[in-house]
Length: 82
Image 1: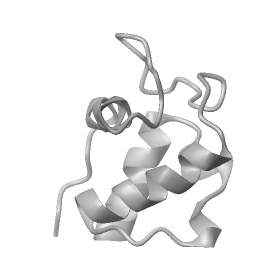
Image 2: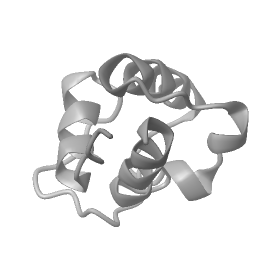
Image 3: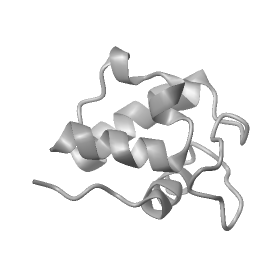
């Protein structure tokens, strides 16, 4: 079983891939949508997560409860790669 990424690793991924322009020290429970992530970024995010982690993110996973914070996104990736 693969390890779940940390919230910090998720923030780094979002920056590296140009999905979200997050400030240094962005909180694990910070709101990604308030930080500027939009629906186009969500589509890009799903592709990147599938490529990097082999996680299959379905439409039922693409709600705010799973994508709103780096912490929630890390948990989702962990569940979908387990």
